[in-house]
Amino acid sequence: MHEVSGIELDPQLQRFRRLRLDLAYDGTDFHGWQEQAGERSVAGEVKQALERLLKHPIKLIGAGRTDAGVHALGQVAHADTPTTSPRPESIQAGLNSLLPSAIRVWGVREVEADFHARYGARLKEYRYQIWDGPWLPPFLARYDWRSRQGLDAAAMARAASGLDGTHDFTSFLAAGCVATSPVRTLEDASVARHGSLLVLRLASRGFLRHMVRNVAGALIEVGRGRLDASRLTALLAARNRAQAPATAQAQGLFLVAVSYHDGPLSALERPPEPVVTFGETTFGVS
Amino acid sequence: MHEVSGIELDPQLQRFRRLRLDLAYDGTDFHGWQEQAGERSVAGEVKQALERLLKHPIKLIGAGRTDAGVHALGQVAHADTPTTSPRPESIQAGLNSLLPSAIRVWGVREVEADFHARYGARLKEYRYQIWDGPWLPPFLARYDWRSRQGLDAAAMARAASGLDGTHDFTSFLAAGCVATSPVRTLEDASVARHGSLLVLRLASRGFLRHMVRNVAGALIEVGRGRLDASRLTALLAARNRAQAPATAQAQGLFLVAVSYHDGPLSALERPPEPVVTFGETTFGVS
Image (cartoon, rainbow over all chains, first blue to last red; front, side):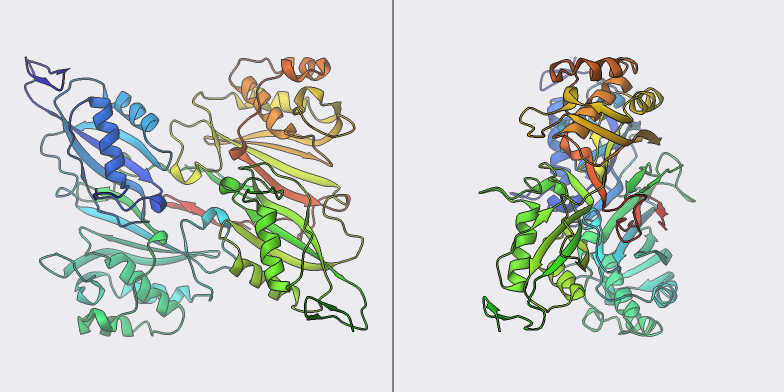
């Protein structure tokens, strides 16, 4: 019988269980997803909780390396364990009791050994939230970037639709990005206004470093009337980061969901939608 | 011509302007509304910002002295100033640029000299939010009390309706409450479920210290099935705090609005309702 750190292994199984974790987090107080020496990271917290629960060293792989201050509704990660217990539901309950309330594990499942949270991802959805009302409600201050100026959402939507499809995104690529190619395909690029809230949505198999926030920064300039919607195509063609507007702040960004197959997200992959209420109105969600 | 701290006064007016402030705040990081030596309070922050803006000492009176960790959508306060400028809209803008994002001033108006935020209040509305879903979304963690057990909202609503009207609330009165009488009249006491969110609403001209949280604590016990709804009336009749369940945590409590006249709240008194969105669904609010 194998033994790892005093944990009994299944002699029949002789293999590791691969666990898929689905997570939501408020990124405000973390130095991003990725573990970094001396910094409090989301992955670091989850890894530490898993190690405490399963009593052996854990290697945790996440689908998207969200930056400091970026939030997630549906981050996906995987980790291997030689243990046969506890069951996934008990691991989820154990993790949520060990983790700070800013990180919640909303799903734990055993998956095939070839499932890979990062390399298996087919589509990632991000959203960027902008608030252009006269005052930003304190309860939303951690989740929205605030524009003091009213934004032209229709112009932003036109500009966003011009980014759909396959392009060289050099103009929206952060310094230090290690991607081998600046070409990416946007499956969806849209802007919708809901009262004082503007929601920019981008979906792609892969994004370049800071790409969503750089696109958001450019679309905000379009919304302010400082950049013509048609100019965005020229900015793309210029393939020059220096010509494009500044990166938008991290706090408005959410990793919404990650898909591991073609077509729309399955119900299991779509993060649960909480009921949210402020003021007099309460909103139920299907 | 009078002069206060170097500010010019209106020689015609010869009187002070009374300003009414309407405020929303996230109480998580404050030691309550009321100023306390050595503690960070909401009133302290607002007073300090007003003094910086108007350049003279300010006495700030709030409608409700919310406890540490309690939030507000529609707190009301008043303060006097001998200045004739800046205009209310500029004071609002100035305050919001000086205050932390957890405190927002959503209205500043000149009011009659006999307006009193505390003694003039005719009705205060509080709400207490409880979440009984399997996991509490990180974005709501600061605003809901979480029950690990599913709650019977119908039983809670029945129990709440039994509290409507005029009663001796000694059983729900905190130690150290300095009110001269424990008798209060609840204009509204209701419980509604919206998905995993339960909203307890209480309205009254005046509340005893910790009364809303003590009533919430008792209703949660009803929801858990540990206290029969009909027993709540007996608890009231007992006039004994020791027999009633524990005080519910501060984080679920919101001061919703304060009214200064008979009848329903006016549009000016009703706090604006932000659009809130998490997950895939965005909710517009009238």
